[in-house]
Length: 454
Image 1: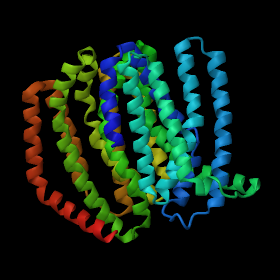
Image 2: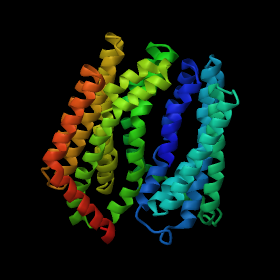
Image 3: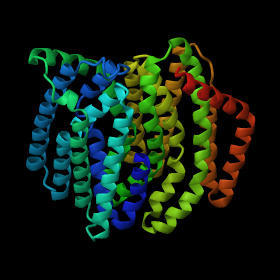
Image 4: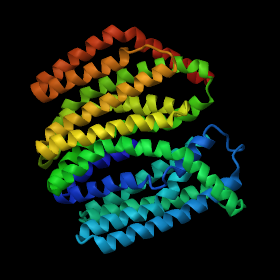
């Protein structure tokens, strides 16, 4: 439900905002995407250390003290960001955007810690309801503003804050057994915070590094071209990544399950999950042509951004496998540092490719191709590493994803139109016929696993 709401808004908002207003809105979203990691691994450390425990096993006093100490830290961070925005930024809109990014430290980041905690201890339904309520309230407020003529990005930011604030209090009420209990001494809480930061920093930094693979390109576009061009590129990225959002919701549930699983059964889970992921994401690329037609009809002013989707759409192939499968297994094996090094290597390559494609060539198209190449390379390296950890040699799925992306880009970017769609359809049918037994077997194993709770 949350993913549906987010995707719907991603397609609806551009229809009401002019290109510049949409560009500023996307600039806010871009910065907030990094600001949510201003916990510096604190929340990630709690997630990793407490993940797999039941609600009865967790030490409520320790978590209580961690939450309030963390909240004080975020308040100080908000003051620092606000001071920088008010003193050093001259452009009013940019000052407002950065100030609102700072406000997220107060409204959003305490909620992030509680969400991570609920995921880790298995209270998934409460986490999911909170997430859905936040998205639905945000959507409702945005619709009210848009249909009453308030079509500036300021109102979208206001809707974002109201939704986050209400659901923060809602989540606090449901976690009152933790938030309003007796805590531990400050010395104990500081020691616990140090351990959480030490454990979580690597995972957090790995996640941020992962975002920078794309973020560096976006930032370079925002500096090299105007806000309208930034909006076009962001529109294409948001549309492509909305598919990955659906997958990420599943990965939240998979990690606690893997951590509780018998290590001897993880290779079977990896093999079957990997096979079952490939089929739906390859099938999903078939929606591109009808989606392109619909978007060109509904959003003609974003025609340039829509055309970029022919390049960027295949990122869902690699990001789905990375986020749902590979990252979950690396966390289960406590290989956060390996995740960090893989992502850092891709960040370095992203910097180099951005300097070449944007700094020297001034070519947005080449920079978008580099995003797909880098994300596919990261997926391949992580896949080989995870298989090495489990002594596996199953390269069929990753080869299939690479070939699928090449065929799709050729069909949608070079051939184009209905003929291109037919070419990819023919490839998909051939791939399914070749590997149908493997897909059906994987689905059967997954069904049995859900029944027996591997």
